[in-house]
Image 1: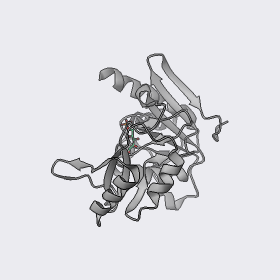
Image 2 (image 1 turned 45 degrees about the horizontal axis):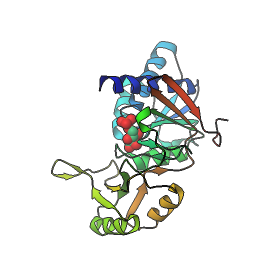
Image 3 (image 1 turned 180 degrees about the horizontal axis):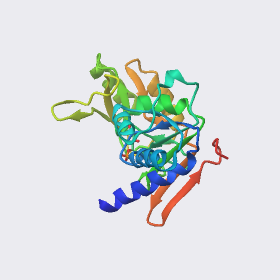
Image 4 (image 1 turned 60 degrees about the horizontal axis):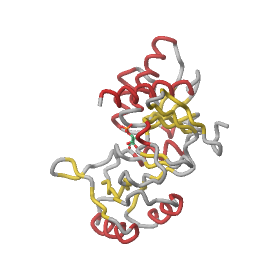
Length: 234
Ligand code: 5RP
């Protein structure tokens, strides 16, 4: 466990090399990117780094304020230079599953507004086929049982509303998370994303297709950066 935490820290800090003075930076959510947020705060106070951040969750907002990153609302600015975020899985085409931390809607909005997306991860997140990690889908509380049934029919798998103690997890947007246990069978994530989004009760799905430009990956051999050959950092 300590080793995984060390890997997350290494990846999170290394990804800060993409952040330059004057940038507007999307700040992702999770236990890996939290190290990026802390390091950016350190650089602001130690080196006078001048950046503005947009957090992807209330948890990240709180951390960013604690470490001294100036924040703005996405609506106040015309796009971001970069977003750095975690992922639950990524495949050889740099397609992602995200939402393990229930922040997928804000994460996707921020990613769409960013000129580049860098993912920070440890090497457990690299997969050949997406789906071993249950696919998070944000759904409206209204008639969520019907939405879950539709998702089961579409994906032909078990779908559960994510729980925290006795009640459902409620996202920062007041919605619920349905986790779809597809198994590692998502071989056409673009089609799967489009099909899921056709269900009315679905707010957003944690498939992030054609968004990730680089993965900063920490593993037994140290930290490596893999740049998407079809991405925007080439
Ligand atoms: C939150 C996310 C996270 O980025 C993802 O779950 C990875 O988190 P961690 O770095 O803690 O493994 O998508 O919604």
